[in-house]
Length: 467
Image (cartoon, rainbow, N blue to C red; front, side, top):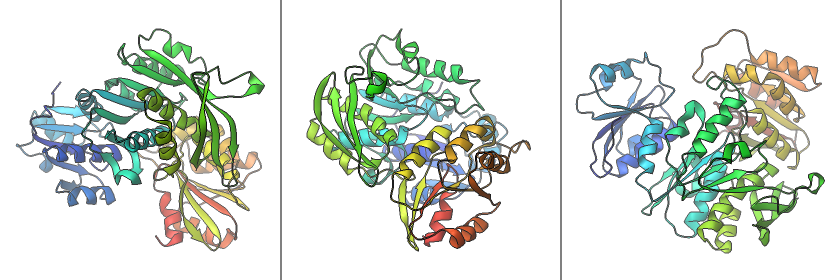
């Protein structure tokens, strides 16, 4: 495998540079003095920003983008092996690194690399942990899977030995990483276009945890079913976190870090009593909604307490966080209708977001949902219907294909039928224009409208608001 010498900047090209992660690392290498270029199938605000920084961008992936001065090419898992640009790299025998291999090499340049993994919640937890470290002036380098206003994007270049990053399980990306400390938020069945089943996913998270060195630490959600199977043979220290529930005899002594006496205000913003290793620490107030985000905050707090960060700094950073982009993001109000956007694209995430929405002031709760990938929609069809039924009214868009081709045996109409079986008020439209017109005619003053999905459904709410 080609090894990047980060002390000797070279010429590097990114295939798929418009992705949130790829763009961040392209910017990072550019900051270090590397000569960076990249291509993508689509122009976007992200690629515009890269060009503004002086990074050469090619719209479209063609063989002509690959010049002889390129010393290494970084690519994403989404790039097909028959991609013209990818084939030209192979023809010219230029060294190739996938995105995960590059991040893994980067981790080795830091004294303390902290990786946040889990099926859901990675961006929120990474953001919270990053803000806490910044609040205490620890100057971390950060890579987050969303736009974090506090750092003006998805990447922050620090000068300390701390590196905080998300660690995605898809295609076993995180098995190329070298964390000193890691977090496992949850382990659910997802990405079943790659994994065989839940047991296969659990095995990957176990292998990820085994990459933590003996002197490192793993912070794991103690509510994960049979979590001990993921930790029993680890050499590193293991700390658990979770939410207390006397009904199930779960107390503050059950976990190393626990949230107790949880309350929510009129806007579903949570607060809780924080316990660390059985001792009361302080009352924590969040500015993000929902029970799931209380859980997401706990490992960020645990890492910070172990680091010796003062509780005052932790509380200040937590309270200052108002969600990263596309995480229950307030977009505006039109005709008395509050418009929120959320990235949820798995039944567990949909449930968490709509449960939080139920506690938000509203008359009718609308969910405009765009399923993400055919395989995920087919695999979780009934679970999606159950989770979406938490909304009063559901509007479905066509499935966002992403990396997949239409197999012809699943569509949003199938999901609509499952919702009707549950008695849910659901409508389906095959264009965003039709969805917008329907919403304008039917949403009423006092309603809460959530656009939801990992595709481009966000544009529906933005169009309604004239953004």
